[in-house]
Length: 290
Image (cartoon, rainbow, N blue to C red; front, side, top):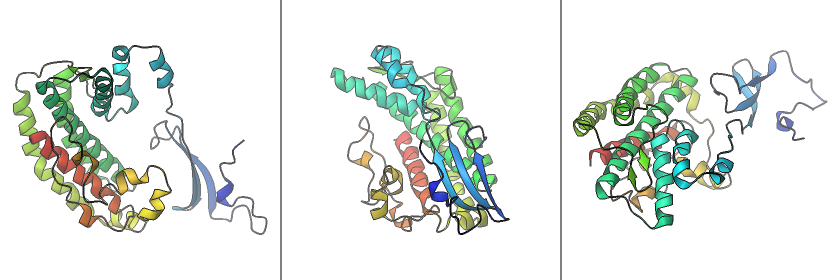
């Protein structure tokens, strides 16, 4: 049996198991902040976290085994549920993979519809991350701002395919539906509306006392350390070479704007980790408009 608490120093005999101010608690998987997908064993001294152990795997639903008993077309809607805040993006990745295997290509109009919907989904996902991350560390206002604006994206999704969360937008070889009347006008209206809001998000947090005190110099990690930790390089150091990977292989011919946030991303702590999200939000905005 795996010892999940070995690094929490629970077995040191030269000192008490816990002093009068320390506490070991379980956070999740039922806790609202982990919403069923994660268990965290915490060692606390008041509000100060002395040690943690994360236990993952609660969201595994056997999708690989399900896929073995489905055709490519039948499995298509399942990927929408695999990441329920990026259903459109998941659908695009799956459809592109199958199309590559079959050596087929979606029509140009379908490709541009895919780009618009996927970039809107990416923008909505970053809004969700930013608002909930700020909320988790005590800054409440950003959640109201980001969810207010994210709602406009969900309205577009709902009009397009009838769903707001598990949005099934694409099929192998194209899209599920043609765009509805007024789609282009509503997308442009939203992009005009949200452009200044992206700057507001940055202003809300850059000098926010709660955000700065609880993220500055927290979880600081350089590029050499991140190389040894699987997955950290993907987002936190994506801009270390001055451009994002999507610039090397444009999605369906749609070119995202230049990555302009590398200069702001140097310390490698939690405070810096939000800059890729801000930068990608702006790129999604420009890609959708283009």
